[in-house]
Length: 511
Image 1 (cartoon, rainbow, N blue to C red):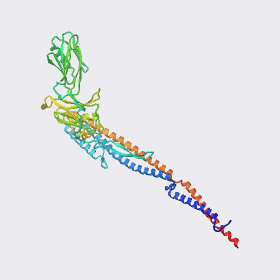
Image 2 (tube, rainbow, N blue to C red; image 1 turned 90 degrees about the vertical axis):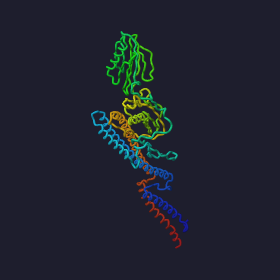
Image 3 (cartoon, rainbow, N blue to C red; image 1 turned 180 degrees about the vertical axis):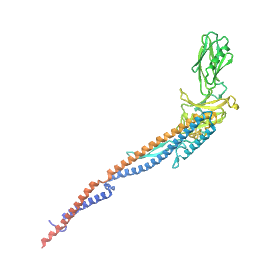
Image 4 (cartoon, one colour; image 1 turned 90 degrees about the horizontal axis):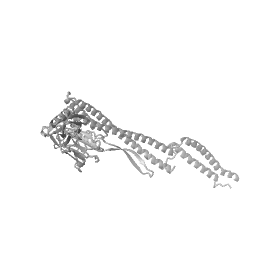
C-alpha cells in the first residue's frame, strides 16, 4: 500500500542517516580531541579511573618538586660537612706539628684559630631556603610519595633526614630526672703522691734462694740475704735498672719493698716467687688495699695513677641527657644529642675537662674489654701547688638539657702549652669523626632522595602511559572510520532522497 501520509522508507533512511551523523560527530570529536573517552558519558568507569590517575600524576609532580628541594638542601649540608672535615683535617695537621718542642706553638695556635673561624663560617652559611641541616638536632622530613591503598585511601610517605649539629655550642645542663646512677668515679680524689698507685711487699726469708719479680713481662731475680734491707735494696735496684717508664722501687723500711707507678694511663701486672721457704706478704695496693697472708708466690696489679669515671653499660642515652665531672669544685659538662651513645658522652666529657683551667690535669677515654663500659680517666700530675698532692673528683647527671654541638670543644683547642697540645690530639680526632659521620649520613640521604626522585619520574611516566591507553584515541582507526562514515553519510543522503521521491509516483495514478 502506498501512502502520502506515511513514508516508511524515508523514516528508515532518516534514522540510518541520523545514526551515521551521530557516529560521524563522535569520530570527528575523537579526532579533534585525540581522546576516545573525553567525558563521563563516553565511558563512565574508564573516565573515573583516568581522572583518579590524573590526580595522582599531579600529586607526583608536586612530590617531584619536594624531592628536588630536599635533594638540594641535603646537598648543601653534605658539601658543608665535607668542607668542615677538610678544615678539621688541616687543624689536626697543626696539632700534630705542635707535639714537637722546637716549634712556635703560638703561631700554630693562630692558624688553628683561623681555621676554627672558617669552620664556623661554613656551618652558619650552610643553609638552603633558610634550612640549615648542620645546626640544631631536629630531624627533617622530605615528602617522598603518595601511597594509594586498594580501598582508595591515600597516605603520604616521607624520607627522614637526620640533622647533624656541627656547631661548637656547649649546651645547657639539664634540670630533669637525676642520672647520677649512670656515672660513677673510682675515687673521690685524684692523687699524684703515689699513695693510690703503689704496691707494698713485706719480704721475709733467709739466704740460699732467689727472689723473682715480674713486672709486665720484665723479670728480675736477686738472691735472698739474711739482712732483709740488703735483699730489698738489691730488688729495688734491679727493678729500677729495668728502665720501665714511671716505675720506681724503694726501701720502705721495716722489711717493705715499695713499687710505685707514676704513669697516668698505664697499669702493670706484678707477680713474685719467693723461692724455697721464703715468703712475700702483700700489705698494700693503693689506698684501701687489703693485706694478704704471706705466700711463696702471688700476683697483683700496680694500677695507673689516673682515676676512672665510668659510664653505664645499660642506660640509654637520650637527647638532652647531661653528665658532669667536677674537678676541685669546677664543673665540666657534656649534654648528649639525639642518637648519641655513652662513647660520645665520654668523648664530650674528656673535651670539657681538657678545656678547663685545671693545671696538671689530663684525660683519656677508654673502653673496658670485659664489660664494654666507656670511661674517662682523669689524671693529676701534682704541678698545681695550690692543690697539694690531690684534686677532688665528683660526678653527676640530669635529664632534659640542651644538647652540645657536634664540634663541642673546638673553640677550646689550645696548643700553646704541652698539656693543651697533648689533649688536642685526641679531641680533634673525635671532632673529625663527628664531621665524617655527618657527611656520610647526608650523602646516604641525598642518594636515597635521588633514587626516589628517579623512581617518581618513571612512575609518573608509567601513569601517563596508562591513562593514555585508557582514554586516547587510536588515530589510524579513527581516520579509517571517518572515511567510512563519510561514505555512509553520502549513501544515506541518497537513500533518503530516493525515499522522499517515492510518494511522487502516486501522482501518475491521478493523471
